Length: 393
Image (cartoon, rainbow, N blue to C red):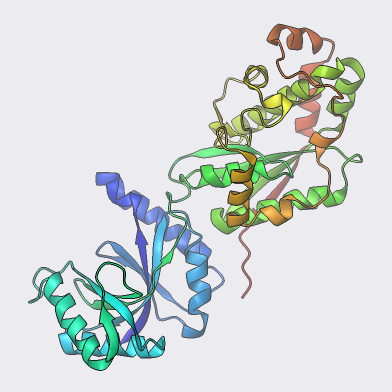
């Protein structure tokens, strides 16, 4: 009787002949998430991934790490036993004793992937349920709304018994759907947009626009910290810190006040696309949501998108602010995002920004600027930071 961590994956099952590729990527990503745990064995068998031969004292820590790996649907600490009904029954009672469960309503859920086993799933559930009732006189059966469940899986080599299932982040394994470039500010929205895109198996890189000395070193550290939080799910993140002060000063000095924000956003898009092309990223990601600020009206989005040919993903486009804040809390970025350090978007702002910019007027207003030279200088001054997953035990 051995303790194991049983890992399930969901959407990968739909990948047909490509399924082995996705399973291999998921296994690689789980190993990366567990890189600070040195004593364990991991294997894939019969539609499941198993972690074995680990120190039971760090079981909860390992489960927590695995549940943050994109592609993992759920995780259960389980007992691995021989496929003998007496042994399986004893394992169920041992697990209940360990978890101090003595009463309440329950249901037995059984799965039999080994079709040669002499009982089917319904018969297994009946046998186990009867045994539990005999050992726990204060327990009752409720197949519709039980207080707790006992799960039994009879698979090719062993049977697995568990009564706890921890939901994970789901999605697809990182690295199975290409690379995107995230425009990462110090605010609430963009980290959430990056997280939501990465959940679909996309490898992230990020670009941040830094306006020293108008924004402080702490503002820069805040963005780096947000990047580190994202590595909790993505394993690593390349962060490009772009000097943006010169561009903002030129826009502020030479362009109409009402168009400052729109023109600034157009420069950001140009620079992000150039870096994305160099880094083989196929798409840009922003945290924009329709109507949230003056530059995010439909006209504003058209004006900023016009300067790039690369597709732009906006995962939050239909979210309201409360929904975005709730998601930020769930993924762990909110408390860092609300730290009171200004980013480049909060300086050199328009006093009366236009909400319905005309593309022709915007283009005419920025003609005075040497766009190519400014973009080139910003890219040349970019600092590259590699953030790696760091989970010290």
